[in-house]
Image (cartoon, rainbow, N blue to C red; front, side):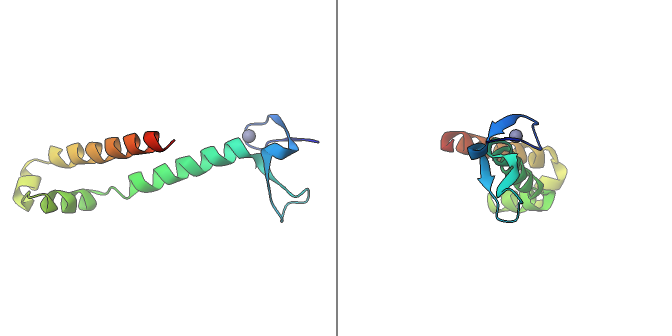
Length: 96
Ligand SMILES: [Zn+2]
C-alpha cells in the first residue's frame, strides 16, 4: 500500500506514515520524515523566541555584569545570545 504525503507530495510506503487513530486510513497525512522535520523546527523556534532581551540581561547580570554596563554596551546582549545559540547548536549536533 502506498500513500501520498500531504507535505512533501512524495509517494511513500504505508509504513513511512505514523499511525493516527483519527485518520480514516489509520495513518497520518504527512510522512514520518516531514513530521520529524516539523517537530524539530518547532522546537528550535520555541527556544529562539524565549531568548528575549530580558532573558539575556538576567543571564548577564548573573555572570557579574551591572545593568549600567549592559545598557552602555547593548552589543553584549547580541553576543550573549549568539553564545547561547552556538552552545545549543553544538549540543544538538552532538545528540543527533
Ligand atoms: Zn513527506
